[in-house]
Image (cartoon, rainbow, N blue to C red; front, side, top):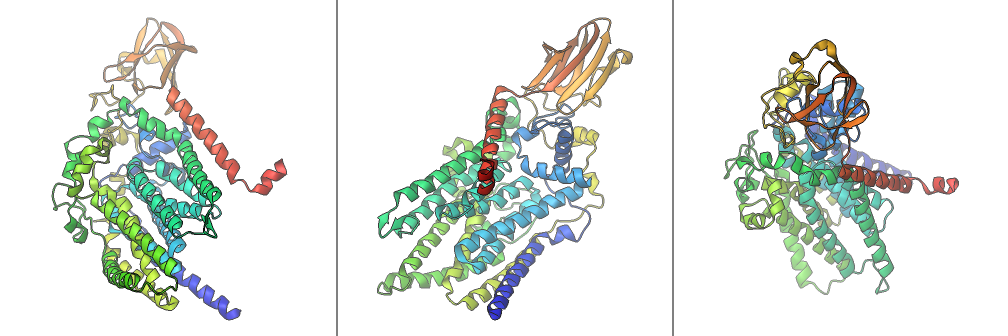
Length: 594
């Protein structure tokens, strides 16, 4: 008994050591330097502090940001995945350092991706396979490019949730405890992190579910069959769990999803993100780019001379070669040795599962290639994906699953463990150089600033996507106070009592009716009241809100309220979260209350 315990502990420590090695390989450049580096999208600090400011002001769920939009505000978090910035804002409010907050988000996504890959791989292939899947996914060069070149924080957060979604889905299929919880929470995480990854992954998820359920049915798994009799009740239970979990996830994220898709016409997003550079026709890949290890920190363009890399990875390619050779041998055995009955059903099911992972890998890679342009031309919504190579977000997950299945080919446990360990080490050596920045900034605050004035004047031009459709694309006036025309007014005749993200209150005592030009963009939801009575407002000089204050002493208020769509979306989310909390409560607590 003592020997078995020691062996078990050795296995656990070995797994922990290799997982730690992979985590350090993906995160070392974040840990060795106190500073930070420039990426394409260096707006993270501005987003974090604007989220933190809104939360401090009592604006929740956060939709409006006060200083983006050239100081007139814009509904950034109504359309841009808010989850990473809720987490980053809480960290910032606790520790007060925005660089630490960004690093925390980077480290957290590396850890979450690593553990998701391990849990998924272990579920399918055991510990050795879990290590392989975690390694191939976490150290995928595409993730390194998004982290250290593009700075696509929301996209890597979206990728993090993909393996957890598949993990929960498989647990539901096998009727295992907490499967629906993993599935629901991971879907919510994906929905609230990245719209485009969601759009890409959901149809692939449906295909995966069909493939997996098909193998369970064809090989009469006990979850669906008992003594060759189809268990309709179990099938309906699985179907219900999938449907209810998906519905709960959509409901819980409705406060974001519904306005994001149905109110985008009130912004300039289509006008901005569908410009020439973002035309998907310019950004297709060629097959040879998957095998080109030349690394860069530039941008994407037409042809094969992109400034960034779409390399699949040294460890991935080496394992793929070994995998193909071994599976060719396995296929020959499968075809020519039909009389071999030992584990025939298990081997056959493993074969078809592996084939399904291969098909999904090829499909997602194909969708990034120029040869798939005819598909893109037929599906109108694909234009919002902008870059076809974003399909690699799903491809790297299924490639990791495909390569992880190599552990099925080694029946000897010791050989399997040694192979996994060697492959992990090779992958770390081959990928560690990708997980670093081009250079560190001498003074990170030159790019990652928290000053509201700099966000208004400098960062707004970098992130103009969700400016109100009524606003000028680049306003001629960038305000430094709530009242734009303050120089034309007698300062003793008005007093700004409240100036929060989502509400303004001004005390006025003008002798004649006076126009107030406010540094707030016109956008559905902004309501004006004077002395508690609804008051009409109009469009100002640059698309801002203009109010005519009557003569005499008055209280002029402006509040960002919900539209009917946001109200219903919030109610759906509230109701869904209450159901989730109730279902998450331990059954013994519920029984005691009853």
